[in-house]
Length: 145
Image (cartoon, rainbow, N blue to C red; front, top):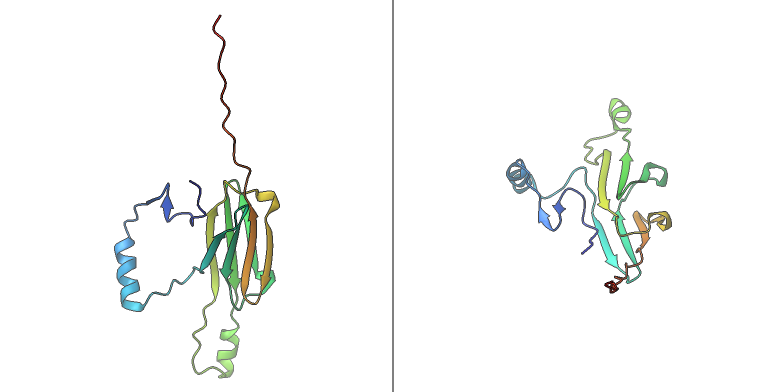
């Protein structure tokens, strides 16, 4: 069964082997559960389409890219920081806002990639992804001669 599961986390419903998983989980437990370099998404099945909502607060629309390559869609958002210039002036006491590149990839093999539409409003990227038509199994009987 098709799912819009983030690429790299599960393959055919089975969690893939990652030798560094225990270290990552220990780091998350020690430093907290924040995932730097990753953003949160919700995926809703609307029957004839999927709705993917990605939280990308603070990004400009121009800094968000949705690329499709074969059966995979990659959402990339990049945030730049001017903190270095402002730090020289002494305006910051503390700067905790993150900057860098944030990326997620999804399997879209069951989606009409050419019909995907995107909207970015109030810090949320919304992708409407129409499903491909379900293949109707055909059966027939061969005549024996």
